[in-house]
Length: 121
Image 1 (cartoon, helix red, strand yellow):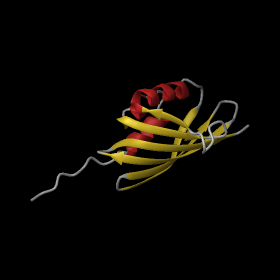
Image 2: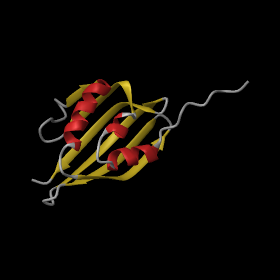
Image 3: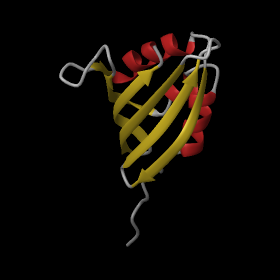
Image 4: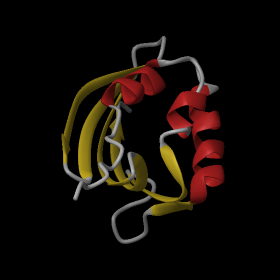
């Protein structure tokens, strides 16, 4: 008896998606029913911003990628149905953003993400 392997999370696709000029490839890594929780100085842990579904996540990423800034995947670790990564961003004026994400995965897609971010002020 053989067991069907679940699709693996594609860290190269994550890098290409994060570092691209548009969010299309990054959005494709999310499951239709994905949930994204964002914690930062404006949406603190007791009241995080929560996006439900790929469409809401795509709208947020469209806004982020419409800004003049660069994105870089710094590190990514995958273990089973979990992954974590660090991302750094820089605006042309030198303002930096750093984010850390913890992911839950299903069939190679992101189903849950908690993103914690901080930026220069």
